[in-house]
Length: 151
Image 1 (cartoon, rainbow, N blue to C red):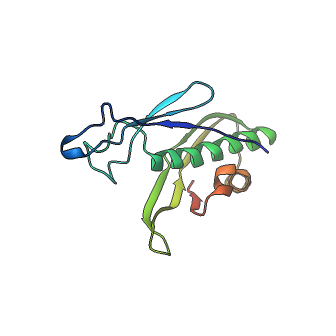
Image 2 (cartoon, rainbow, N blue to C red):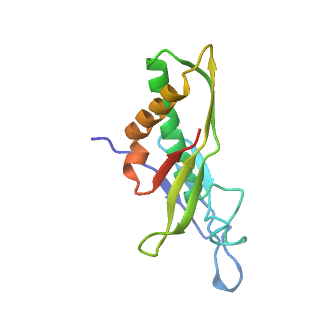
Image 3 (cartoon, rainbow, N blue to C red):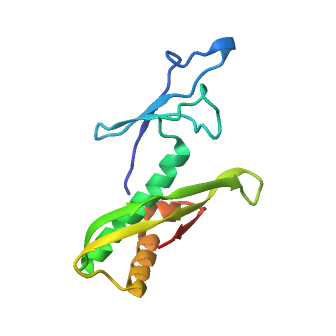
């Protein structure tokens, strides 16, 4: 068993707004020392209640799914003898009403563009590497949302 931790801290200082309302700016802190400024999504709460310059939980979820998939893809591609030179994914999460009527990230669409040093895999092999990566990804295995890889 592994335990992964994150610390979330919000305080009223700097979040006070008129009429007793408050902003949602806060900070995520991780055990390695990294801190990330976070906020509610501006799609959910308009500024000044949110801060579009900060990472929101929905973006973080999409980034976690994308990152996890990429890490497994790099591992499996390396194991098959391919040298990945560059991996870029402009992923997106689609928030809509779920089948039970609740707002949720119902789909995550990954769009990896991969450049190899030397010969890369053919389309069928690349698709198999993506399938293997998806099946191994801890984040994908933890979510109810569909995760689609578009190459």
